[in-house]
View 1 (cartoon, rainbow, N blue to C red):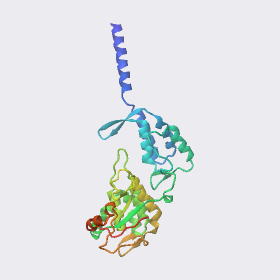
View 2 (view 1 turned 90 degrees about the horizontal axis):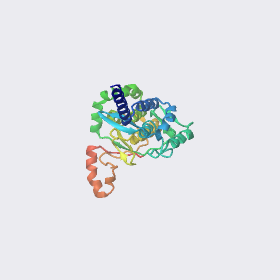
View 3 (view 1 turned 90 degrees about the vertical axis):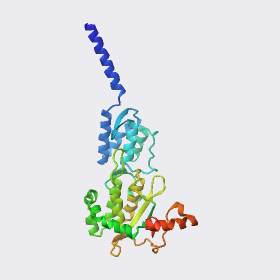
Amino acid sequence: MIRSIVRIARLLSLLLLASWCAFPAVGQTTMLAQLDSRLRKGDVQALFDLAPYFDSRNVVEEHLGYHVLPTQESAIAQRLVQENCAFTAQEITLSPAISARAFGDFLNRYRTQIRFSPLAKAFLITPLEQRQATVQIRTISPARKAALENQAQDLFGQEWARRGRVGELVARKDPQALLVIAAALYQARTRFDQYPERASMVYLLQLLTGTDIGTENERHQLSWHLDDDYDPTSQLNLLVYLANTYQQYVWSEPVAAFVLPTRASCPLGRPIICLTCCTVPWTRRRCAPFAQLTLGIRSVYRH
């Protein structure tokens, strides 16, 4: 009888051990979550503590809504770097092949240059003011401007706008309001399990400049829908552009908006179409009426 009980106890122990080995570790997920929290707070040491995970093939459970996703720790580590850093392609290019040693060597090489940007809420090596961004600017239609003015109270009342004191800056005719909006847009970038609302930021920027600003996305294509872009490249380029030019904007009473004095304007009714499909004459003739009626394109500026 006793031998049977011992045999059963051993069998249960083996079953428990086998089930424990079969399921992904949960404790390690907590460790990576703690590193993510430290990264978001600007703790540069968290980058160095994250480096060893680049070689880890341990599988942990991630929860995305109701979904449980088994994921290698190395993939999570790289994603955390992508979400919390804005290094240039010349500085480092992340790929599944990069090792813990290679990432550690990169960190040590730039140890004294890595800084956490309060504006971007991300780690940088090259400052925003030393970067370049390709943008195009088109004037919004009077109907669009009127619609935005009707939403002004709600836009200025957004929590992120109150936190950044955008209303106070506009009241003082301070163009720093534009930089604050662009920073809020990039700070609200999509993360693994977070999809913040960003339309209000784009709308308020349109209202305060009377323009729509298109920037280059991760595919090196012009994007006019920065609030919808999953990849934050276009949002980062807007922040780079305004970090370099916001002080050039001045308040214009006639248009009740911040304007660039050096930006050339085209007469109303003669839109310039900044679309690839409109480069040939017959396509341009077809695009022009549609663009004028729906987008109100009247001017373009390339930075």
